[in-house]
Each structure stands twice: as C-alpha cells, then as structure tokens.
Length: 257
Ligand SMILES: [Zn+2]
Image (cartoon, rainbow, N blue to C red; front, side, top):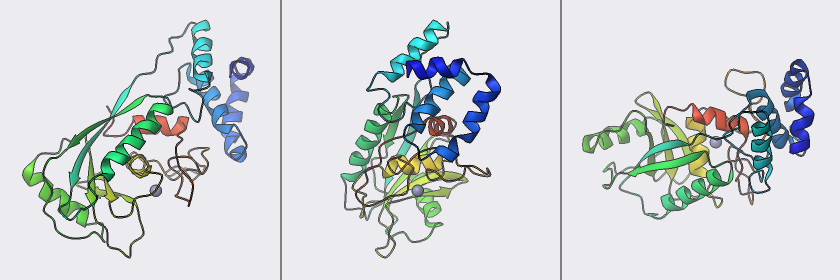
C-alpha cells in the first residue's frame, strides 16, 4: 500500500482520473479493490469509509493513514450509525434469525473499515398482520398496522421480519412504503451466509448488485466480486466484503447519521 500510494501520488491528476475511469475494464483483476482504495486516498486526501477485504487486518489502512499524516492531512474516519427499526410480523416462527443477521452485519461492517455501526430499535410487540407476503403493496399494509402502535422516525429504516409464500424463492427484499425504502426479511428461508440484512440495507441506500450499473449511469458502481455483500447470492459463497464506492453511497442514505 505504501509504495502504491507513493507511485500514484506522483501521477498527474489527469492521468489518475483516467485510470480511475478505466477501472471497470479491469475489475476482475486481482487487487482492483485495493487499487480503488489507494486512488481514493490520493484523490480525496482522506481515509475512505470502507477498507475492502483484509486491508485493515494487514496494516494497509495504517499505511494509508501514515501517508496522509506525512502529507499533513488528518486521517480519522468519521463513524456513522445505520439506524434501523425492526418489526416482527405475527406469523414469524424463526425468532432467532434477526440476531444472527445483525451479528453478521456488524461483523462485516467492523472488518471493512469500522466506519458504520448498526443502531437498532426492535419494536417489542408483533405486528398483527396475519398473512404471508407475496406482493409489494403488502409492505405498506404492514407499516400501516405498525404505525398504530408506534411512530416510525423519518430517519430510521424499517426492517420487517415476515413469512414469504413458499413458492417465492427469496431471502430478503428491498421494498417501499410511505415513499421510503423498507427491508423485508423472509424468516423461513435464511441464506446460510447471513449477509441478507446488510445486502438489503445496501439496496435501500441505492446500491445496485455488485458489478451492475449505477442507477442511471453507463458504468458499474463498484469493482466487487462474488464475495461482495452486494453480489447476487451464489451457493456456497459467503458474502463478506464491501468496497470504497459502496461506503460512499451508504453514507448518504436517509437512515444513516
Ligand atoms: Zn439484491
């Protein structure tokens, strides 16, 4: 990391910008996420919120911090809270899943730069909706019932723990209610990697699937691979990484403070 930063910082800005633009052509290359991190340090003169892969564990974030220090720039990362409000629909039988998903999300966030913490409010009473989920408008119906018992702050992302009809093969959904994004988790079909909560939070922040185009843009948003949290699920693949651009998008979500 130290050599990479020194080399990149010697490049003219125009050349650096061009390299950054071209990164998607090489995104399957080993180490692109690390390159993206280094580019971002040079370009923004800040430590990125996300340190992808093992950059933190292998001391490369410290290298970047030292590099910035030598350049006379502060290198502290501001921490943000991902604010959730969790509701359990009354038909749900798997009552331990949310804690498993939460634990995995916290573990991933901690290892990938530790700039985001979950701030979770769990509503104590079930939402008495009494139906399995198979249509998008049902999220609004559940939210409407939930609101009879409590108010949902405008800066918290509602997370609905539900049962989805058996013929619908999904682990989680980023839906919509009251004009804002909401997460729904299918409690009967958990993904073994337990990354579903963080994956759907990412969608609610506006993140596409890893390697897919950014909303309204001609190029992908990120250089992630199958192990990225925003990758589409694959059998026997545990998603556990984030990357720099995803952290930048997450930080701007309505529920991140
Ligand atoms: Zn998805």
